[in-house]
Amino acid sequence: MSFQKIRNSFIGLSFATIVCRIAGLVREIVSAKFFGTTGIYDAFLIAFMIPNFFRGLLAEGALSTAFIPVLSELIAKNEKREEILKITGAVFTFLLLATTSLYIFILIVSFVLLKFFPIPPKIAEIVFLLRFTFPYLIFVSLAAWAMGVLNARHRFVIPGLNPMILDFWWIFSLFFFTSFFGSSLEQKIFGLLIGILIGGLSQFVFQLPLVFAVHGPIVFNTDWKHPAIIKMLKLFVPVIIGVSVGPINLLVDYSFARSLAAGTVSALWYATRIYQLPLGVFSISLATVLLPHLSGDVATKKFQEVKENIHKGFEQTMFLLIPSSIGMIVFRREIIELLFKRGLFTSHSVEITAYPLMLYCIGLVFYGLAIIVTRGFYAHHDTATPVKIGIISIATNALFDFILMKFMGHGGIALSTSLVGLQNFVLLYLMFRKKFRLLETKRLVKRFAEILLVGISWGIMIEAIRRILIPYGIVSTVVFGIILSTVFYIVFAVIFRFPEIYGIRIFKWKT
Image (cartoon, rainbow, N blue to C red; front, side, top):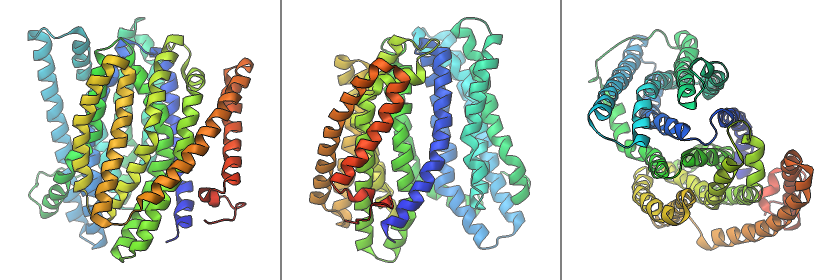
């Protein structure tokens, strides 16, 4: 499979991803207006992240690695409808009981902690809010079950719209629910809590009509000894550690940030939303398209094509993410001010968000490269190596957080994230090269240096453009700055004959 065909699919998927990312960005813009970078929003974000962590383990982790593949296999083998309903019903029942039990446990623990232990006020806020955020786990787990049922039957559009439903209710609650609870931020936060619970439930209910149409009714079933369920568990258990690495690192970051000044967790959250935008649009989309092609080439032993497509994936990622990083560093304050500065998001909020955004951008390209090489491991049916390296990153991230935040505040936490991204990529690259001998270090380093040098020269130029545009206002600076920067980067790519731009039809060179 030529990389040009992979690139064509990648471009289409990127546009779809952009739509969802824009909806999520709008949500953050509205949230910034209502809550800014405040202590209560810090507490809410951590309380919201904790059920999201368990969702990744119980719902998305289990479904992506076990439920969908096994269910798809049963459907392909024309298993009886009644048998499939029993299996899906057993998974549904397990998720419902497991998440409800976990919520009851959290309620008991929170009551005991707040009643009998003298915990610090910042921790007490999080523990109290967990009582209200944790039911979201129940609803979103059932929504993930519905998504798995539909994806197994090749229905992707309705499940794909699900994130936008939460975004809608999140925004709706900010405008219409928060005012019912009082005038203080500590009171208004309850309106947002109601919004995310309705959003989680709506994500499940929204999919039910299609689930009933293509799959059938929900059958409650506790037969968890069924062979298909056992098979799912065997597939799921080894991956659960790998799924937990990212959320654990994020929780560690935000827990350290919570010990700093009020608003630092919120600042890291907003900065993360911005720097992850090109990562999702470019790297994750490219890796999603690349994986089935790599898997097919590995299965047919076309290892030269595997090697070439991984390198092309590396090069395309560097071509897109290096300028994305430099551009966000140059325009960081203007982008944040344009997107978020209104309401309670003040000039101070802009500064404390721009600072970690600059440091996050340092590691952006390494996270993108790591995503590509990880897909190379998956294509070779090796999920263990990325998990082992992920575990190492948990310890490294905590150590870097602890050391760097002493000297750099919450910026040290962002820099820690970038350093961990570099470490992960280097370890993944070295292990992949050692195990499969398909990569050329000289080729990768040479291409990285070429794109970086061009990127730095381009960065100096767009910094000059930014300074020229500043007197004309923030909107003009960001809009015309991005347009001119993009045009000049394409001009640089044409002058230096970058092969990565070959996907644009007017440029005909391939090498």
